[in-house]
Image (cartoon, rainbow, N blue to C red; front, side):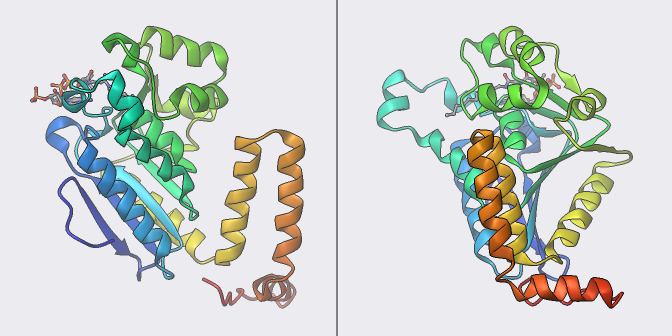
Length: 264
Ligand code: CO8
């Protein structure tokens, strides 16, 4: 994952426990090009495969998280491409990463940028965060899950308003009130990323299999209906009792000490 990339930076930090991915095309507000998509997916898969890494932070350099898919490239696409050569489909792979993804958003998260943030498991925002789905204004619609995910995050009326008008962007405060983001971190971009990294480090200290099961169980609710989700949760819950980490965690609680998880 630490290979040299053209459109992102990817490094392992905090004694290798956290993967940190920064979108790095600030001159075009981190517009998501095809190269960028391939690099993001490759870096995330690399982090997912590294045993030391327990959680991943995604953020953007400069004043945007990402102002959407790169319209320069999108402009030349045809309908035929979208069926025969759907390269942009690779973005879906972001939601298949097993380790927790934390988006640190300060500035524009528009179109594909908003959708990328919503593919993450936790969104932390800086005071300047702005979410929007302006695709309709350029004659298209969200194509990376926006129509499906935004409605779950902010409700139908507000999602429709954003998607059908392409306007009425959502600021940091509203994003938190509606549950799209979990909290606002005041201060600079660096402070926001530092907070996200601290959270990732904390998660990385937990039992790795328990974290992966917890994420998969929560996603069962997010991706399927209640009954199936509850069944999946029960199966995973039962499975944690096969972990030494579970015995250790519960023993440590009664011995009033920090648990020493083996699988992290
Ligand atoms: N793509 C390419 N370049 C961009 C993009 C973009 N999405 N956004 C900004 N840029 C470039 C600008 O062209 C400009 O370049 P230059 O300096 O060479 O003129 C530079 O970034 C700075 O931008 P602005 O000067 O416009 O900065 P402002 O602060 O004035 O405005 C805005 C910021 C409001 C964010 C404005 O840049 C904007 O409206 N950007 C486009 C937002 C947008 O429409 N996003 C949606 C894109 S479509 C999309 O994401 C489709 C997803 C579905 C994909 C399907 C996959 C399967």
